[in-house]
Structures are given as structure tokens and as C-alpha cells.
Amino acid sequence: MVVRFALIFGIIYTLVGILGFVPGLVTMPEMQAGMTDEMAAEMSHGRLLGLFPVNLWHNLVHLAVGVWGIVASKQGFNASVTYARANAVLFAVLAILGLIPATNTLFGLAPLYGHDIWLHALNAIAAGYFGFGPPSRKKADVSYTR
Image (tube, rainbow, N blue to C red; front, side):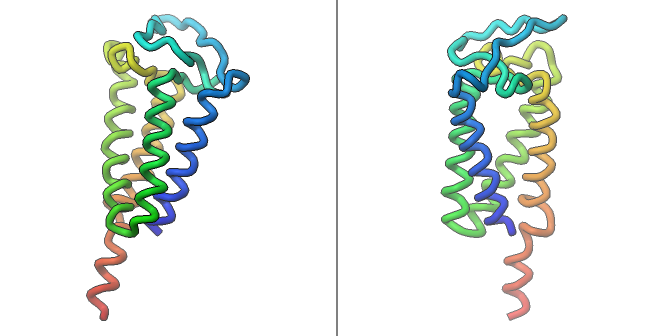
């Protein structure tokens, strides 16, 4: 179950990373009260599907997380659990940083505000379930029954 999570999560994030580079799917960001949208890395900066703020670095991180998940799934249970745990922590931190105005652009490197906040929080919860919850202990439980 954890291996399947890593594979599915990996495929989704790889696709999202690729989609972030498709000009027709990324619209120019709208200025909102309290949001400067000033990015040190302006390349590919916009909103994926008109909703999720992205830029070059954000897309590259999506690709890296995606490829990591696919590789972890091929390496097996332990690598997939490590992947899920690391992503639970990573996405929880990103959700929190997105809530803080001083850090919601990751210091100008990647936009973390808007719809990214709830998406990162949901990803942290899902990854936490697979990384720290019952699915992460399944293999250990099976080994005790033999």
C-alpha cells in the first residue's frame, strides 16, 4: 500500500511538474491585497490551471518529488515509507510557510500562498498517513506472523 502511494504520488507530482512548464496552462498571477508576487525567479511564474502559483523552482521541485516517488516505489517498502515520511514533513512545513506573509514566497524563490496552502496541507496529511500510520507498519506486522 505504501509502495503504491509512492508510485501514484510520484506520477502525479511528475505530471504537475511537467504541466507547470506548459505555457497554455499557466496564467499570469493576479495581484492580491497583501501579496506582492515579487519573485527572485520570475521564469515560468504564474498560476497553474489559473489556481496554483508556480514558477521555475516550484516546477523543478514538483519534478524532483515526483521522480523521487517513482524511484522509491521501485526500491520497495522501506524506501517508500521514507519517501512518505519525508514528504509529510516537507509539505507540512511548506503549508505553514505559505501562511506566513514573510515566507509565503519562500524568500522570493517559490510561491507558496493561495491554493498551494491547502493542497500542501492535504498532501502532508496523506503522506503522514502512509509514512507514519498503519500502512507504514504493515510489513513489520507481517514479518512477526511468520
